[in-house]
Length: 162
Image (cartoon, rainbow, N blue to C red; front, side, top):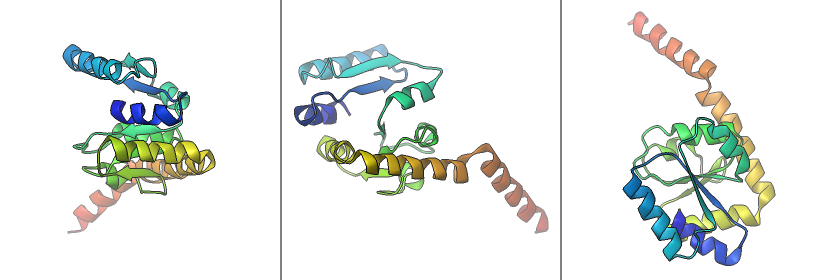
């Protein structure tokens, strides 16, 4: 994400990346050093752990899920519930949640492809809003407490019939 932002900032200087979550001090230092070496230390904000991720999502135009091994992306669903388009890596559980070009964008490559997705949303803010709205609908329909409860109930009903 930091490498992609370095590419995007060349074309859209006001872009900012907010990095939320905790990690080892060594990993965070490595990320800060990378941002510094790419000259984007002022464009990347490390906020650490937050107990209110929705506040962060609402500050953002989009959410990134760059993990290549995400099983069931709670953060992805939370971003969609905040009506934000998600740009996610097309691997693991992310493509089961994000529908490419309907609720967000999926990429398979590295920083160049991620940067391209970011630029597509920046160049098309109306479309980005539309993706976020469709993501919200998907989050409510498939991942809300009510929806999950209904799905569990259906499985239990089927299991007791056999």
